[in-house]
Length: 449
Image (cartoon, rainbow, N blue to C red; front, side, top):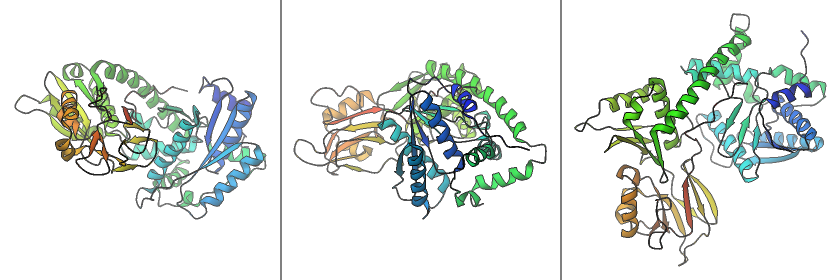
């Protein structure tokens, strides 16, 4: 059977489904050097040139293999030959010993999305293809995922600062390789793609053996389409439920009307709580539905003698007076103290954006950012403590970020995101914070394309 190349007209049809795009669009592309990402980059470049736009290739060096830097340099050479702007992003954190692929994936997206945010790029194109989609489905099926997971990767994901788009989700990997072959263009073969130490590679090998059976790419695509329709509809219902039942507070916690929650469909209730826990806990994934069900059973059985007080996904879920539940960050696993050396914007705990202008206070003492904690609360200056006490429920106070002079426990300058701190006696100098989560509780409804 002849394997067809991906033509520009075909690719243009894929891109039109992912719009609208601005005039003269700027699109960043994650380019690892593999056939799928190199092919995507060349196609995006041709597409944007027709529209007088600009393609920007971004390569992440995770530093996990000795060959990674030379491979990134090869990508840079290819991009230079094609006249495509290229930037190398390096993962400089300490490397994990477990869950390597998952943590590398998280770091990769953080680097790519941060670059787009800083440089004002609205679209980040990723080269996931039909083979990746099939493998994702089988992996999630083996993990017991529900409709959300079994719908597969979304073609568009709206992040706080960038749209992640996947134009090639319906295109087999072999067609991308064939397209590069027809252009006499090379690509990099990552040796980790042959290692069965990783789940995705084991699934890939298993799927190759399943193609002769009833499990085919087309049958998986049909199943994912059905789940995608369910996910689409549930997203709309969940968005409405969140808008009606939840109130968000600037200090980084939320309250829920229990009576309004009980009027919702059971599935929508679970999704609402799950989404809220993910946002308030600053986690990448929602908690397991069985754990959410356990919390909801406690809510249903709550009484004055036995109020709800549970933890889930780094959050505390506590009953308040007046038919309200509080969901706030748990006072554990909070970020380590961070010395502020220069003006910067700090993404704290995946939930708060803290902007620091100078690196010292008026007396010249260095500033340190860390969680308030019980000890910090006890030593908090009276004017600040009075404001926090009136504005923030007790369970949500200890996880607040605080600014210290040096690292002395009694040297608190202020709590930057406590509401109403606008007068000179309670204002936190040089520092502004706002609740700005990396995982919005209201996701854009996944389009069906």
